[in-house]
Amino acid sequence: MRTSDVLRAACRLLRAEADHGTRWRLVAATLATCGSSLLTALAPLALKGMVDAIASARNPGGVPLLTLSLAAAYVVALCGSRALNELGPWLSGTAEQRLCDRLRRRFFSHLLRLPLGFHVDRHSGAVMHCLYQATAGFHVTVASLVNTLVPVAVETIAVVLVLSHLDQPSLVLTFIATAAAYLLIFGFGTIRLARQSQQVSAAALAMHASLADHLANVETIKTFCAEGTALGGYAGASGRLASSWSKLLGKQAGVGLTVSATFTLSVCVSVALTSDAVLGGSLSLGGFVLANLYMVQIVRPLELAGSAARDLSQAIEFIRPLLDILNEPIEASQKNPVVHIVPPAAAVVARTRSSAAFGVRFRNVHFAYDDKHQVLAGLELDVEPGRTLAIVGASGSGKSSIARLLLGLYQPQLGEILLNDRSIDALRPIELRAMIGVVPQETALFHDTIALNIGIGSPGCSLADIQSAARLAHLHDFVASLPAGYDTVVGERGMKLSGGERQRIAIARAVLKHPRMYVFDEATSMLDSQTEASIRQNLQEISKDCTTITIAHRLSTVQDADEIVVLDRGHVCERGRHSALLAGEGTYARLWALQMRQSN
Image (tube, rainbow, N blue to C red; front, side, top):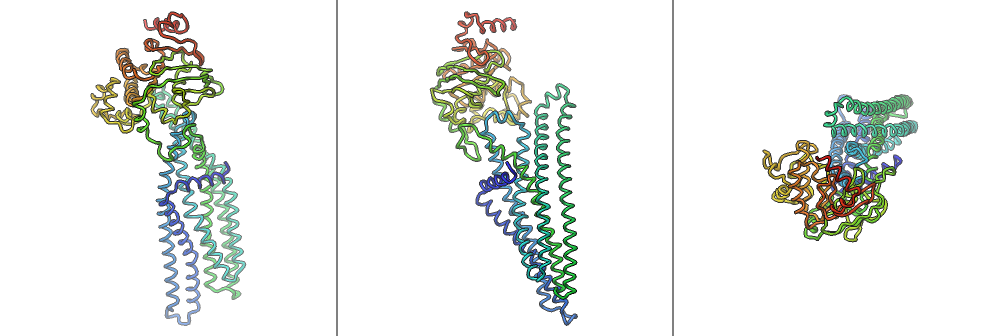
């Protein structure tokens, strides 16, 4: 998008997120700053009258009432200007905070509704910094529009009108020429600064992405003594950011020096013209003071306007990445989302708990993560309601991809997936996922309590419900032995727990949802043999009335399944019960024999 398009999009977003209270505060802030600028522009008129009154006073020993009145008006105008100038930022600042709060919510809600592929392809650190950077950009945008550009326009118009009544056309032309020069300097400077600001924004996102990536993998860094490599990568990204900022600051300094030269020239011209006018009798001493005071005074708002334009161009480039993310298409069946808050799953879960199990159909499903990596090629797969299907195969055969497709985390390039002969595309993702309980191979935990990590997918559940699910996962006794019990904080990504403990939390999390279907993706791979056998029995009990898909590498964990499917290069090469597949002496039988030899 062009810079002007980004600015318009940012203003539309601000207008959409501004509620009644925010709009009222912004209007009040604009009126306050405009009033301050108007008083600032008119105060020199009182000073002019006071100087002329003193210069023409016939009684030097006394102070005429008119002089006192003009002096009082001058002081009141200056004080009123300062007071309103302080009031404006307070009003606009509170409005900005309300806007930023709503923008943060909107951005996070949008992130949650984006396809999984978006998050896989992005650095989380860059996405997080994108929000921080854009928030700062919106702050500058509001401040520039409300506290600077509009008030400066008011003050400039007032000054031009006052100068035009001095009957000094040359002064008016000088002032207009100075303003035009400022606009040209800042206009061309803004274009140059915008390009460099874009590089600063990109470098900042890259630096924060590097920081987050290294911190997320700090255990691996320490394990492999890779501190030097990590520091080198981060130092390179940080150095590029510093270099980008140096170039931006250099260009800002160049614009500032050009403005200073313009200011010096305009003041010299103004002093020369007004001095000649006073000597020629066409301008009073007060008019001389007024004209030169205006020329010096108006430089401040013009410079502020130029600085605001410069900062606005930089803010636009900081906002651009956030707008790009907000323009990313959300998941296909979330076209009518709640704007700020993702709807809670409690009601959906409540509707599905008493529902019967459903059947699953994969019809000619083709899927690839990218053009070079075909995962599923014409997959045909049926799972009857209430039955248990096991999916086995070599690594990379597409086992876990089936689970991701079933959950709607990715979309197949060809074919369809049906639940009871109804396409999953017809369901909202929140409805689809509320019906499926998943125990993944790698458990993702939040840096929070055990209770929250178990109950995260079941809003409104009680502690008793959580404890019941933990018992079924053989987790309760362990949690009860901890000093803080279910209030124990598990640490970043659950690093305070063992792999088996993390996986049992995942099992309890899935059980608590009371789903109509279970997907066990290597659900017991992190457990010891004794605990695995016990949990397998519990899983069979809790899933006996549900449709179940078990994805496994160890064939010993699926031999009791109603049907076993063997995947090879993205399609089904064998299917049947354990005994029949062994008798067939095919791929499954070879894998079984290999694993039996390895276990012995």
